[in-house]
Image (cartoon, rainbow, N blue to C red):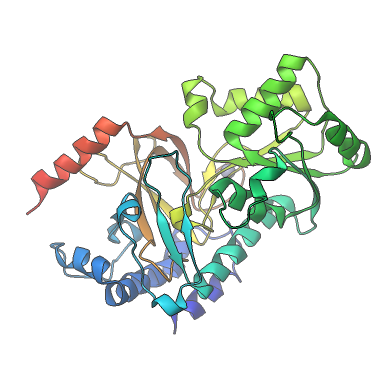
Length: 365
Ligand SMILES: [Zn+2]
């Protein structure tokens, strides 16, 4: 059976309904097939596998699947498809001077990514498109040639909404009250989707409302946000604080953060009502010891490794990130979702990241 046929079968399953064991049986053959495919089609990846001690490419469980450091996509363009099959090259966001990741997508991978986000998001939002408030300014998506990751994220999420309304002004990032009030008059009686990047929501919605002393009331609002906690951690704002201050300023009860990265677009990990990030059927998560990369037991902090069935066009099906996280459990979240759930607690400090690669050098055979 082709990898595509195996992936297609995943869409017939409930996104969070299989136990970890049942899920492993479904996705392990796909992940192993991806290892073989990328070894064959991506020379650099093949060379990396060659220097591993272990000659077996077929892992007996997900934790044994070889992984690449996500950073490699910042320094190398790793592709498993011919140039003529490349549909687009995604780039990560990054401040000036920082290296960005480049991810090669072909048609199949691109289609799977879109389809997967739809399947995951529908679990939380339902099938109807909801009136949508975007916590950003309209210019962020205007120049379609040079899209920022922020713009791309907004456009992606826009598929789940209608009557898209950007609530910030282009010039000063202040709230466009006229737009916001007329949107709320029209729609706030029913469910409303709000989307923004975590820091934007914090600074330009929550804090902006707090500063002006104005409050809005969107009791049926569902906020989806993503983009990392780095800046908020610097301001000592955790997820609980974020949610309670959001509720006080806007009346919004339903909030779903999600964790994902451009190197594995599509297989996102969405937060449930208990604040836990859940692995959908398309992906999995493993927490590793940053010193020796062994698998960490639950409730101990380590590096987050993400595994995804979707990357057909580049060897990104198993990636070790530089994010720190904790595995919280398996199959037993009080929300009822099966599979693994975890939290992300921040990023590995630079110095430790270097220590990590030093350790790697020392341990090399
Ligand atoms: Zn849960």
